[in-house]
Image 1 (cartoon, rainbow, N blue to C red):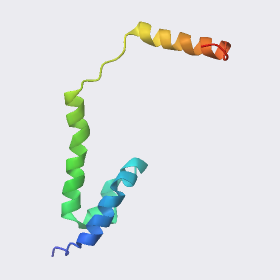
Image 2: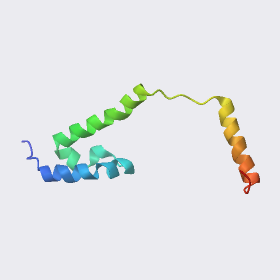
Image 3: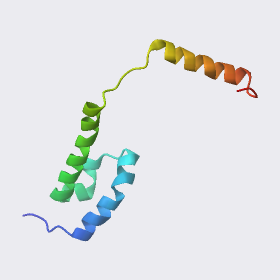
Image 4: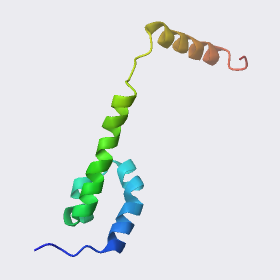
Length: 84
């Protein structure tokens, strides 16, 4: 038997989504997700966004000298905090 979907429950859950996702909580164990096919589908769709973004903008590692230059600048700043 399929449980009746309450739109206000869905709206409340969806309003909490940014906070829930940001908390790192395992979304599959959330009671609303377990009982609401619509919100499960929404969450699955949201999960495809990071993958799509990675395909659009590939991750490029900075060249080694750049990391060394940044580290050197940080060390200089720590040694001479009053100078720019």
